[in-house]
Image (tube, one colour):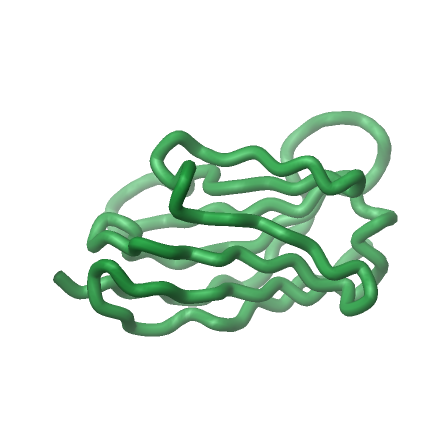
Length: 119
């Protein structure tokens, strides 16, 4: 099992930056991948970015070039650096994790952190 705790959300103006943190209860080396998802009001939850235990990132097209996912193994923490924020980035951001060796959807979720981008 793994517990995930997000932090770092808030209110920011368009064009600004925020860094979200996801603290895991165990080494991120031992987790298949850690991902960020988001859910805007009235919309389905969508994938944002993912980083594998080997450090390989991938991103949704909507955030490529603006968001960067990274991991700090010493702190068991994954970060999402969000730059050039747009009002359409407003959502609750969730950290999620997949354990085990097989690919598949994440099995563990954090409680979410609100990001609001004003125009």
